[in-house]
Structure formats: C-alpha cells, structure tokens
Length: 270
Image 1 (tube, rainbow, N blue to C red):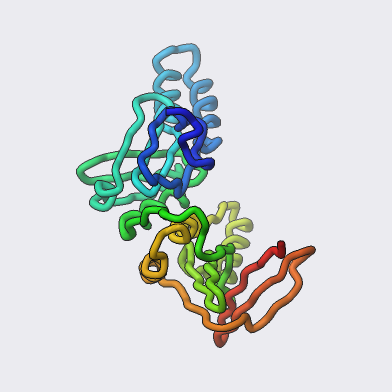
Image 2 (cartoon, rainbow, N blue to C red):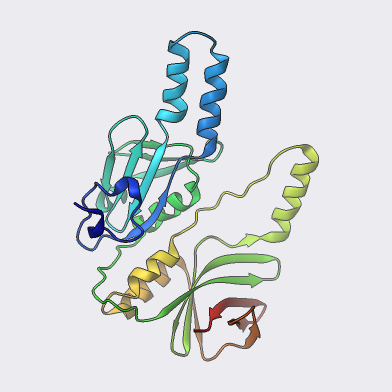
C-alpha cells in the first residue's frame, strides 16, 4: 500500500503497513536517547570481547523501538525482531505495568509485550488506558462538527491539562491527565535538587485532543462526545466565557470561572 493511502500523521516507518478502514492515529513515539547512551557505555565497559557488547546491544538497543497506537490497534516495531500487532479487543484484557526508571510500558496477560526506553511512554500509557475503556467511533464526515483547543483547569495550587470542545455557546473540558498539585510538585523538585535527586512526575497522558478530532467527524457526534467525556470525567460549561483577554497577536484567551476553579483556552482569530 502506498503512503498516499495513509493519514497524514501516519509515521514514515509504518508506511509499508496496510492501514485498516477508518484507522486513526492516536499516539506515536520512538526510542529514548538513553537506549543509545547505555548501549555505547556498557559496550565499551565490556572490553574487547564480542559476546558482551552483542548482549548489551540487544538488551538496550535491540529491545527498544517505535510504537504506533491507532483507533484499531497497537503496532510495536522493535529494532531487532518482528513487528507486533495487537488489536484493540485484545488490549482490553491486558494489564498495563509502567517502569518509570527505564521509561518502559509492559503488557501482561494472554499477550506479553515489553516496550522499554520510550520518549512518549506517558502518552503510550494513557492511550492504552483510554482504548481499554473507550471504543473510538468511525469518522463519517469530512468536516468537524466542533472546534477543539488545548485547555487547562486551575484550582488554587492544583492544575490539570486537557482539551476544550466548543459547540456554539457550550464548551466541554476533557482532561488528559489527573489533577496535580503544582506547589507540592515544585517543593519536591526543589528538595530533589538539594539532595541531588532528579524529581519527575509520572502520570498517564490520555490522547484527548486526538480522540476529540475523531469524535468531531463522527455522526451522530453528540452521544460519542458525551461517552468520551463521561469516561475521562470532563466538565460541561454553558453560556459565554466569564472572561476574555488578549493572548498575543490575533489570539484571545477564554476563561470560565466555576467557584475557585478556572478553565481557560486560547482561540486564534482567522
């Protein structure tokens, strides 16, 4: 199948893989630089032998690879070995384990798969979680039914990123990750710097923006939007924004105020 038959966001390495009807890309990612660093470092440490460096190359570089998560399946392409294809129906019965130290996502159950050294392991983690609870609809319309913007929810020291779907005078905020306490995380990061320990947050990031792009082209879209919002725990905002402010040339920041909480997103004019 030629590359022209694939969506525009289909990665180059997967162009030879035939796409299924209505297949839509949710997340894609590649190998973290630490895989190359560890391969070189430990290969040099093994000395002039052949077996040691070959094992190191296989363990750090060969087992890593690239992934493509679509509305239909997970495709894993390791540097050494055959591609792995897991349909969406099988993904629902697998358990997800995360190894944050080596940025690894593992699937366990009837199928076993380990995907280490991933730049986008949080996005892969979140995409798998979403597919286990949500069945993406088929895109049946060429034009989207609503506009989508990256958004954020701020409540005191707590923060949550996501996307906002705007339908006329109604806006829907759908979070892509759990609520985080910014003050607590900043304090932990500062303490880590003092102690010489790198502090990182490890939260799954759901592909909400990509999911909403698919829902916007589904017919009927209302029920699909409600289902997705219910799964991720979103907010429905009625009426015009509480505040409007300039956000750079040709852009306006819209803000809804709900008690102590504020949901904001930026709209580009034209």
